[in-house]
Structures are given as C-alpha cells and as structure tokens.
Length: 418
Ligand SMILES: *[C@@H]1O[C@H](CO)[C@@H](O)[C@H](O)[C@H]1NC(C)=O
Ligand SMILES: *[C@@H]1O[C@H](CO)[C@@H](O)[C@H](O)[C@H]1NC(C)=O
Ligand SMILES: *[C@@H]1O[C@H](CO)[C@@H](O)[C@H](O)[C@H]1NC(C)=O
Ligand SMILES: *[C@@H]1O[C@H](CO)[C@@H](O)[C@H](O)[C@H]1NC(C)=O
Ligand SMILES: *[C@@H]1O[C@H](CO)[C@@H](O)[C@H](O)[C@H]1NC(C)=O
Ligand SMILES: *[C@@H]1O[C@H](CO)[C@@H](O)[C@H](O)[C@H]1NC(C)=O
Image (cartoon, rainbow, N blue to C red; front, top):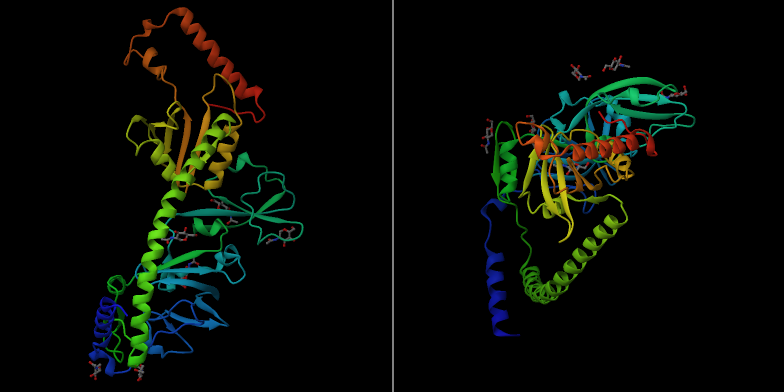
C-alpha cells in the first residue's frame, strides 16, 4: 500500500475513533421506519408500533400499513407518506387509492398541526355530467363512473362559455390546493416548529429536552454508531478506495457531460427553429425565456398584467416576449388558449411563435415588429400624426380590417376580439 494512503487511513481511523459522551444513555426514541429505505421517522414524528407515545409532538403520530407509512388526519382522511423533509418541514403525501380529489370533501386541517404546502389555492365547483362534448382537461377521471363524468371548474371560471346543460352542480369546495387538481397524486403538507427546522438544517436532530415534561425542545448531534474496530477499518478502506474511484469517474464524467450538454443545447435550438419554420408555437421553459430575453434586459413596454421584453431566437429572428403577471389560474386553460392562438395565421395578425407555462410562470412569445406601435404615430401625446400620409392611413385601416375579418369569420375557431 502506498504510504500516503496509509496516512489517510490513519486520519480516517482517528476521526472515527473519537468517542461521543452523549452515547452512554440509550436514546429512548430511536429513529424508525416502516420499511428499509422508507421515510425515516423521528421527532417531531413517531411511529406508533415502534416508539413510545412520549416521543412525538401531539398530532404527529404515524403508523405502518404493510410497508407504507400512514398519516391519519381528522375525518378519517388517510394518506401515505412518501417523504419527510425535516429541514423544510414538508411531508410529501399521496392518496392510497390514487384519488386525492375524492378525499378533499373530508379534509379539515383546522384541528391538525398541518397546513397545505401549496399556497396556490382556489375555490372549485364540482359538476356531474351525463353527456359531455367539450374539453376534458377539467375532468376528474377517478371520481367519474359509468355513464357520468365529474368535472371541477374554478369558481371564477366563466361557466357561460361552457355548455353545462347535461350537468348538475353537486358541491363547492373552497381553498383547494391547485396541485391536487393536477391529479398527480402528490400533496405536500407543512408544519411549523421553527426551532426544529433550524436544528435539522444545521445537520442536527431535534428532541424533547425532558421527555417526562415535554415542554421544550433542543438540538443534539446525530448519534454515531459504536461498532468494533474491524468495521472502522473496513469503512476507512472503503472510504479511501471509493474516493479514488470517484476521482477517476468524476474526471471521466466531466469530459463526457460537457460534451453532452453542448450537444443537447444544439438539438433544442434546432427544434425551436424547426417549429418556427413550421408555424407551430413552441413550448419554452422559463430558463429558455430567460435565455431568449438575455435575462430580461431590453424592456419594450409595461402593462397592468404583463411586461414585454425584446428577445432573440436566433441571430436573424427577433421576438417580443410578453410575461404575464397574474397567472393564478389553471395552467391547462392557458395551454388551451395558446392552442387556439397558435392556429391563427394571417399576414395582418401578429404571429404567436411560442409560449411558456412553467409552473406559475406564463409567457407568450410573438414575432417582433420593428416599426413600433401605431399608437406612437396617431396619439398627439407621443408623436406627429401628420407623419403618416392619408394613403398610408387608409392602407393601415384596410389591413387591420382584413385581419379582424379573418379572426371573426375566416378562421376555424372564430375569435371575438374586444
Ligand atoms: C410518558 O409520559 C407519561 C405521562 O407523562 C409518563 O407516565 C411515562 O413515564 C412517560 N414514558 C417515558 C418512557 O418517559
Ligand atoms: C373543521 O373542523 C372545525 C372543528 O371541528 C370546525 O369548527 C370547522 O367548521 C370545520 N371546517 C370545515 C370547513 O368543515
Ligand atoms: C352522477 O349522476 C349520475 C346519474 O344521474 C348518478 O348515477 C351518479 O351517482 C352521480 N354521481 C355523483 C358522484 O353524484
Ligand atoms: C356554490 O357556490 C355558488 C357561489 O359561488 C352558489 O351560487 C352555489 O349555490 C353553490 N352551490 C352549492 C351546491 O353549494
Ligand atoms: C409540492 O408538490 C408539488 C407537486 O404537486 C411540487 O411540484 C412542489 O415543488 C412541492 N412544493 C414544495 C415546496 O416542495
Ligand atoms: C425532567 O422533569 C422531571 C419533572 O419535572 C424532573 O423530575 C427530572 O429531573 C427532569 N429530567 C431531566 C433530565 O432534567
């Protein structure tokens, strides 16, 4: 063995050898879990079968259902816990029947220590429809049955746009986390216990200062295992070995990944340009939007609900990127609207090049028109109305009329523009 490796091994051994005074008393609330690799359960939680009731904070009792970790909430709401993030104080939960909307009516967190993690909440109206010919993106498949479908609309959605003659309203729910309606079967819940979150974020654990009184919590160092010297040597050798191996892999990976990232980026740019030529709106990520607008450098205009920036799709293609600020709504409604706008092609109607619906971030990407707004020429505040000749004005009016005529009558999906 190389001398330096032996030196390193000694160091690791010394590091492992330092004893821990706190280890003499056995931990009354050792960490537990329902299955190997399942969520680790420790303070403020406890596992009913494996720990004493005094180990947890009131209301933080978990149990096992086979290998699943179960959180029981008021009104017999039962959730499976997939992950617990102690530092951010978040539980990632799921419905055992993969139908969170079904449990929503029974949800009442007012007497539990948890709150919805998703702060984006809306009121919804639920409909039972026997025959349905419209959009289906609001359909709750897991609540629907043979011969009827259940739909949920945001309460402020303009129902008059939708034909509901075959539907009956069955109930309303308020303050529903939007993530539940996305039907991904993930619900995150938070709890507040600031001191313990800070503890965990520092790499420590949290516990009752005195388990008999259960009044105050304290931070303590994570327990280290006291195995025999043989295990330590094995661990040290493994550490050194894996460290060297890691170095080799890391170097190889660096070379490989930088090459791969460059290729992927190139491919994405080619796809954007292909979409552009095919007159198809492209879906961009928020990171793309940032890149296109060069980190929102060049602002073209600002309205109450939107801000417009200039962007560059490629060296030749300039775009105007409209960032929408009031994106509280359903992302799918937005994507649907974009679908309609994407089908419009007329020389006198500005072309939608792409859009972004990345979480709550919404943006529309249009062709950039270099001659600026007509407003600049016709309003006396901004400019000189006489700069345009009568022939030019007639020409503009005629072109606009043709564009509006197309929207109202010429295209597949007629559009009314106010
Ligand atoms: C748990 O709390 C109860 C009531 O305060 C007490 O009688 C019991 O001894 C405690 N158990 C442990 C293990 O501290
Ligand atoms: C939730 O439960 C509390 C206490 O039982 C009750 O006062 C409250 O009205 C309930 N809220 C809803 C929305 O049912
Ligand atoms: C929906 O309506 C159908 C037919 O009227 C009925 O059989 C069904 O039970 C209803 N479902 C719900 C969840 O209300
Ligand atoms: C749902 O709320 C609306 C108002 O937002 C109300 O008009 C309607 O009667 C409510 N429906 C039910 C079933 O509670
Ligand atoms: C909550 O869950 C959603 C998935 O529904 C996830 O996208 C989101 O990032 C989660 N929130 C936090 C704070 O982790
Ligand atoms: C915990 O509290 C009990 C009751 O006040 C007290 O008798 C006991 O000594 C305390 N234990 C520690 C370790 O402070």
